[in-house]
Image (cartoon, rainbow, N blue to C red):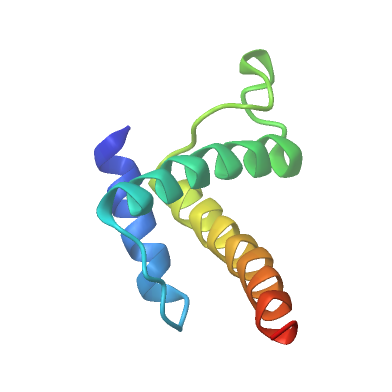
Length: 89
């Protein structure tokens, strides 16, 4: 799961343009979170693996797609909070 997380997180960071100052453990975490987001999306969109439930890890493609979604959400939240901090000064 750690290797899949590293691969998915790294590919997501390469695909989405812009700077992401993340450490290797943060990139792994991004990929692992992306794997579960990909599993949730697969469950919701395709209804596969209904016996396993909605919160499940996905394959490499689902992990990459989920990591991209997680990265975009992280950027939106981080940018919004960061711009508020600078607006007060």
